[in-house]
Amino acid sequence: MSGLLALLDDVAAIAKLAAAQVDDIAGQAAKVGAKVGSTVLDDAAKAGAKAAGVVIDDAAVTPKYVTGLPAARELPIIWKIARASFFNKLVILLPAALLLSAFLPWLVTPLLMLGGCYLCFEGAEKIWHVFHPHEKSHAEEAETLDAVHLEEQRVKGAIKTDFILSAEIMTISLAAIETDGWVASAVVLAIVAIGITALVYGAVAILVKMDDAGLKLTQIGRMSGTRAFGRWLVKSMPSVMTIIATIGTAAMLWVGGNIIVHGLEVLGWHWPYDTIHVIAVSVSASASAAQGFVEWLVTAFLDGVLGLALGLALMPIVNRAIAPTFARLFPEKQDAAPY
Image (cartoon, rainbow, N blue to C red):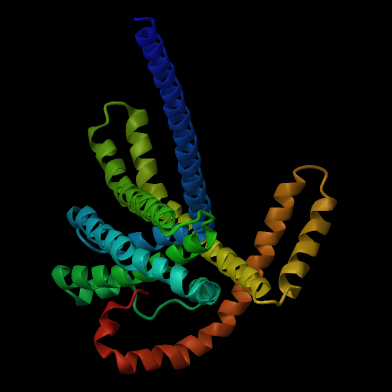
């Protein structure tokens, strides 16, 4: 009997030891899972921050596609564009980015720089058109097309523009990922794609309906302050859209120039990066406070100046060589030009 009791004690001891080991394993797994989750979220946050310039421009560009169309069609049009943006990012660009990272990682920097050149070109062209406006405005375009065809044309143009900007966002995000493994990279890219798309088109939906909300307040507001606020919304929205567009243009030039500078450094030409860094550090050293912010501000400004110079240099190449060639090769695409 005593032998049986001793055996049971041994079994109980083994069971306790096994339970302790299981607890340790579960604890370690939880720690690892938390660490991986934290790393994924950190990577997603870093990637989203690095793509900020493109995101701002995306939000600034989209509202113009509903200009001149009935107010009742604004939200359905934005949803069409947003749905296409989700598809572009998650179904086309995310797998392409993973394949690129797995089989052609050396191509990421050149593609990133190509996207940077695109941002510089678009930013410079926006500034150029401030002083040399388009020959045909959206109002004139709306007068020559019926609402259905105008909406179709605008949606096509918006989706094409979104695809280009989405490709740049995904490429920037891919380059910012520090997580190992294609599964974690896919999760990061998916978080960035969903988060940025929801943020951009949610913000756009709010922006384009703000004047309608203001008008409604002027009609139903019971207090004079409410009606005055509604009138302020209606009057201020054109200025707000102009400010957003200006910030988007500046962000495009800053991000585009920054991508080019860092890409050149990766490829072995350190002079642009080193020169900008030395100037920024020198200027920040003379500041009495917020030296880190001053250094970032000077770096961003110089990156933007470089981006503007590059964009202006690219404009004749794109407008006189690349765009006409594309028009001859794909004439059916010209009615969906994004700008």
